[in-house]
Length: 323
Ligand code: SF4
Image (cartoon, rainbow, N blue to C red; front, side):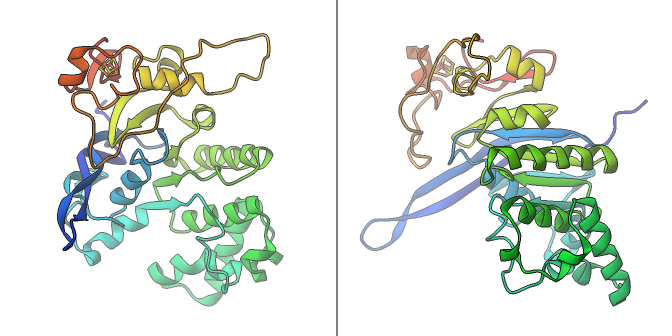
């Protein structure tokens, strides 16, 4: 059987932001927020995209959705290159990809009733009568565990977890194939996080959704992802299926991120390689391997030569000279 066409394929994606410099505001270099990122996501698959704050993972999500225009590289949706499509040509592809934001409160218009928020995309993209739209919105409310009666409430009348359910209902409204989940649970209490993650899992099983799940917390990603990509300073430094990445990390940065994940069993200790120092500036990145300023194994070669992402076995890729 031929391989399924990926829902999403990103190839050598770059997003640079020019920086003004000097007294007279001339050009002063660029922030390399995303610097040559490639991956694909199959139908019904979850790819976790993790890394510290500022590593470029949210910019990847926004560039895929064309909320930001890429500097270079391509984005294909279901086999069609959408990188250079104009707004009108993009419309059918925008239906197929939706986003859930980190902060449900700021992403929901406080002046709109919850039913209108969830039905907003239906109003723009579909010609439905008021009754048809209301019926569809009620169905979406039920699907994410909210009551019909709550359609008339305003966002401030919902709890944090319920507001994220509203964001999920809105993202589902056009029956997308892919949802970009941008840190969707990081603003929520731990107990609520589990409920939202379970809801996302159930919806995936029911609807065959694919997710790009962006998070800084590897523990969250472990519950949901099939594969995981680790980003550092705008690049993917390791990508593998979840079991391989968590069980046998190959990049020292991934090792450090895993070492920071708490283990619930006090009898079990983890080999601690806690990360020291801050992420270097994406305007003035270190030479060679960008991680060498924080890596406990760095050698002279690491300071001079940039390691390429290469396969170390069975779909497990890493960018480190030692592996
Ligand atoms: Fe560390 Fe060198 Fe590997 Fe970079 S290439 S992660 S500095 S050992």
